[in-house]
Length: 134
Image (tube, rainbow, N blue to C red):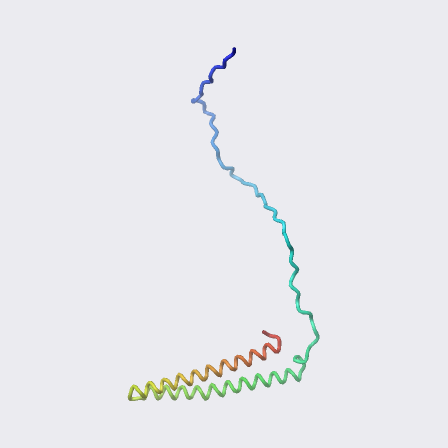
């Protein structure tokens, strides 16, 4: 019977392999297949100019916009002078009660102006929606 002799370990050998990462790595794309394809959203069809685009309708819209702006300017002047008057009264007041009532009057005038502004904004927004701008 043949017995193999044990191999001697060669520790003095200079040939050792060291695991190193390569300096350059190649790109390996991942291919992804679509499971479903959706259609592009449809656009509104082009139509001929409607009644809102005709000169008479545009004239009405311009007149409405002018009226809104004129009422806004009038409210600004009226409520602005009321607010300035109330602030002057607050500065010239001798008692705390007079100052508080004048300050409250100024705040009320400013709140009324805010209400007029929001109303004008709503009317102008409605005009813009009517024209298709919003």
